[in-house]
Image 1 (cartoon, one colour):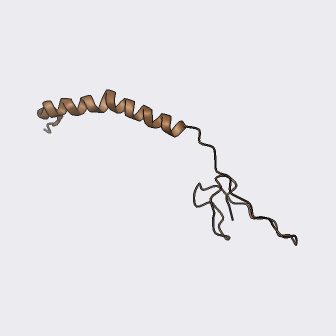
Image 2 (cartoon, rainbow, N blue to C red; image 1 turned 120 degrees about the vertical axis):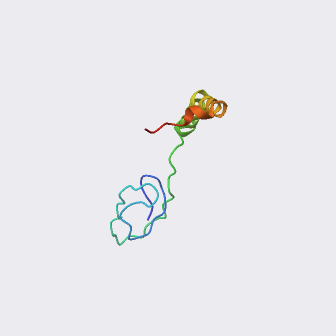
Image 3 (tube, one colour; image 1 turned 180 degrees about the vertical axis):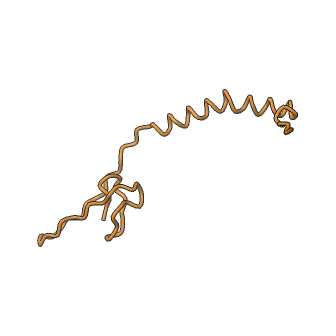
Length: 82
């Protein structure tokens, strides 16, 4: 059985897709022979790549300067407990 949402192949008795978690609809039983259906792959939107670019931008702007600061000033990262 193939998932109508993502096109992943699943076991015949599965209720939900193992790939995307969508509920699987069992095909109706018919006396006519069925045709083999090719799974449809979702179109890539490029959103994941845009998200990764944003994360890398934040890393350069925020994380790297903080790491450099704490390397230069190791005592600043320690908290005192009273």
